[in-house]
Image: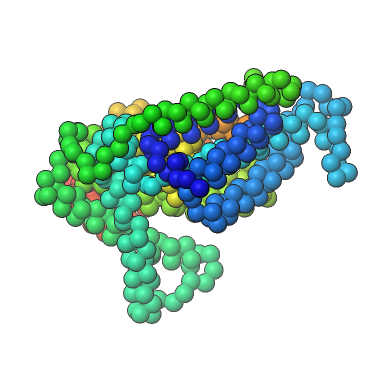
Length: 261
Length: 193
């Protein structure tokens, strides 16, 4: 098992995934997204170093959701063009066209998910933002602002526990019923947000007093570059997509999204 | 970005991160509604997913606040594990643009309740057009699609506009926003009356 995917440039990886998701949006048959999805999962397993158990769990959730989506698309489908061309699933006559559309949509969602997971599970959040700053010219003010905000998350969890304890010690009783629990949410949310805003202000002052000017001309401790591997990945993923489309045209499955439904 | 103060940027980022989590937390609620009612289930609570653009724009009152905050919130949502992945950034960008469009109409000068509700509706319309192409709403029947759009617009106006304003106002009452546009306006109103 290698960690090739983990070492790719995060910006290029994100760009590849977004590009492919956009391309997949135009495909409207069940075969192409299914094959692409399987290849992406295979690639993630072979070339990525990831948390397997979490990956499986996430995918399981997605599969459950897509079954729900399959059902809703079938149940609320538009009038088909050829209503008499039906097939029977569990004693239920459904127009064949609707089944194809529903399957296409569902498998497309699975293909999107496999691409996204390939990105999320092999990318470090801090590296991604640093790379966005270095490759995509994201403003350092914004980038470091987001990093600071992200860092607040674990702190806010502690703070929530503190607020809860403070309420308890002063004898605020547990909420009963919907109205009281809404009030309780408000009692927690406003102090939590207010505390976060205060902390954000202090962080900004601290950053400025240490000489952070937000200028684009700056140096980085960790530098990210685009290497030939990154371009190979981008081109390879695109090639794979087009090869699968070719195969699917050959087999007669393929159809573009032509706004037909 | 140059006329933004650093503290405004960080406060906006913190709000975005917090609401990125709220967005993620509301997804399963949406899923439950959807499994009862079909795709329309999401639309009842869709307004929650625009709320940070309204809050950030109302507090900071600078061009781009609505757009940037929604985009960051979507990015955070993705990084924390939304199944839609990087595509959700595009969704966030589009929703943010919808809210920003409403503020742009007033040249970023007016932040009354109506403008905030309009921003919610704007985000709803933009997100609907995007959803139409991406999630294949086209496969659904026309009256159903129209129903979805109407409910989403109402949800945008009420949940993101009304609730967003209420949250920001209660935050301003605590005094933490005194150096931001919203806090300054409230202080001015108080000294005038």
